[in-house]
Image 1 (spheres, rainbow, N blue to C red):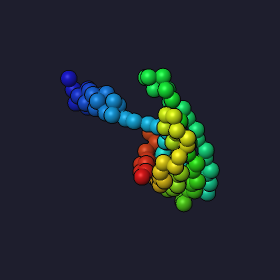
Image 2: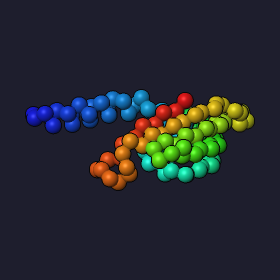
Image 3: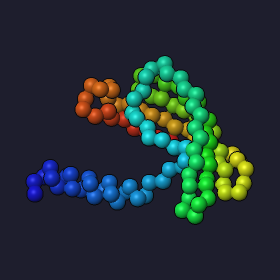
Length: 117
């Protein structure tokens, strides 16, 4: 086994192990590292999740964001949840930041960093 094959094997094993640790709410989504200067964003998300016991969870979020410059996008979110048998209630404030390290499409990969609270 050469060095490149060993690296691929380690990455594959790491992905398999950590993928079982990932948790997402019904209204979450995948982020991309693209930032467009001047972009402003108002986003509403709603999602349902069917549990193994046949019950449902719901989640809602309202988000306001702005690209502060060509490489940084910042966003504040208000999140609401509807636990089983209850009405919607405020869950949390979140502050998310996306940083773009490379120009989109200039290299084979788009590299960036996402930080959220």
